[in-house]
Amino acid sequence: MGRGVEDFIASEFEGLGSNLLFVFSSPPESETRVTIQPISTNEVDDLLNPRIAPSIGTIATETIVGAQLVGPQGSAQVAISGVSANYGEVRARPVLPGGAFISQGDVDAAARVVLLGTTVVETLFGDKSYNPVGEDIRVNNRSFTVIGVLEEQESGGLGILDDANNVVFAPITTVQTRLSQARTRDGGYRVDVMHVQAVNEESMDAAALEIETYLNDAHGIEFQGEQDFSIINQADLLTSLGQITGVLTIFLSMIAGISLLVGGIGIMNIMLVSVTERTREIGLRKAVGARFGDVLGQFLIESVVLSLVGGILGIMLGWLASVIGELAVPTLTLTLTSDAVILATGVSAFVGIFFGLYPAVRAARMKPIDALRFE
Image 1 (cartoon, one colour):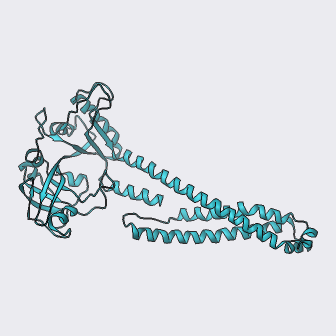
Image 2: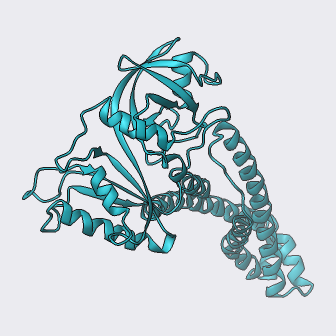
Image 3: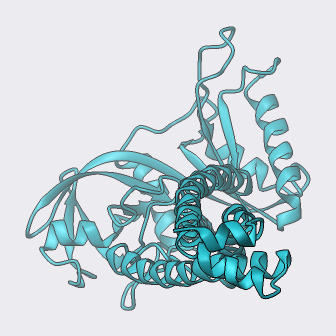
């Protein structure tokens, strides 16, 4: 289960795109600065200059506003994202056949066009499998044409548990000029999130430093903690979540350890009862020449075989649980890996030896005369 969760989170972040940094406005940590200067399109243009930020490959921009959507079968209050033409490529958001992503021409013309997620399609048109391309909907009482439907995704980007299909995309210029007042003091337009793609994975840290250096200067940041923006590294976020899932794996292992302790005590008790019931047999064997090691080995082998059989049954039950778990939660892949099987088998053998040692030693130390007189 722990590895399944780790693999699930890793695959979700791979679906966000590669070599990404997320930059957005945020409250300063220091009390000496309380105002937030929004990131603007002019600053985005500067960061795309190789002389200022040579480690940046491209930047997809996003501005988010609330909007009321009305379709033939229903209405919805959603957050509509104004995005640049390269957003779909940077964030890996493909469009279903028959539609198209927002083009640079749409952005330049501030066109009244939208892309819908399947959840929104279901709300507005009554069926998420319906193809609404070419039809008109109302966005804040303005007519917009649907140009495509986004391929369905399992989860929601930075918000892993969000509905990634409850989204609406429009050209960023349309949102900035037609649906909101997004002008900034420098003559540009507000950008809520910059999706920065570094030139390669090795340049992620350098790109983050270049962004921080530029924005510190552009926003007049003099001291650490006054930054009115945040930079999130995709790799660092994945590492942090990996640590969380690692704790989950350790927790599950601790539960398994308690189960093994209880099971081991059960094996020890069974072997002690077996030694008691077979006392005369032990005495007879020692009387005809069985040595200490012979009796010890006999009971140890029995204990190990008992625990290994239990281990094999446990592996089979684990495999069955993984199959049932995948059927119950299709988005989660529960895998039974070879190293986990080897570990389970080894632990089972260790439990058999460890908890079977005391009963085996007790049997091997019996004196033949006392064992033969036992009733």
